[in-house]
Image (cartoon, rainbow, N blue to C red; front, side, top):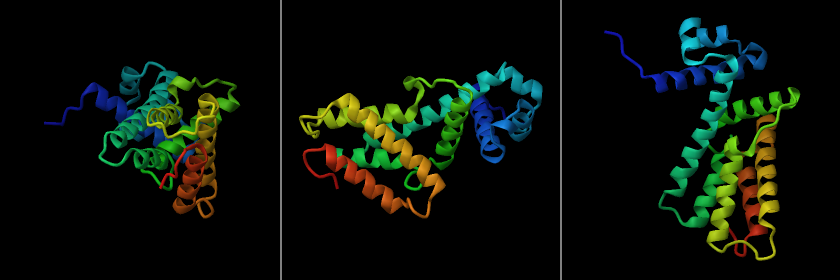
Length: 198
């Protein structure tokens, strides 16, 4: 008897097939027909789960944010010292130092496409921005931030640093190695914290 896969699991498998198509063929190749083929299902089955291509793409984007959130929560729930957790969260968000290279690549494909389509991406759906906010909140709660800092501006700045590192590390992996990225993140954290983050 064939193995039954529940509705939610099937949607995730289709979204992951969407990611693979985006990585291999870009946005232009991400037709529902190509995605259905990659997922190993019929076009009708795909339409059962996602009525429109837009619905499928939105779910695929949301899944990335969900995975980022799970990863961040797992680190914050770990046994490491608080400053180490913060450092680990930031490292995890970047391709050469974390486990989420495909998610990062797909996330940046979606962002680039939004730019060319003149779409806006809300902050509430950006997993990296939410992770950065969580990092800054933790630094504030732990009383680790320098007193004169503007938290809103520092959150935006750290987010810009993370996005720049993500993009550049994919373009120039021989320059922005895992070691170099760790040094840059540590340097940035030391610039905003009262005491050094190691």
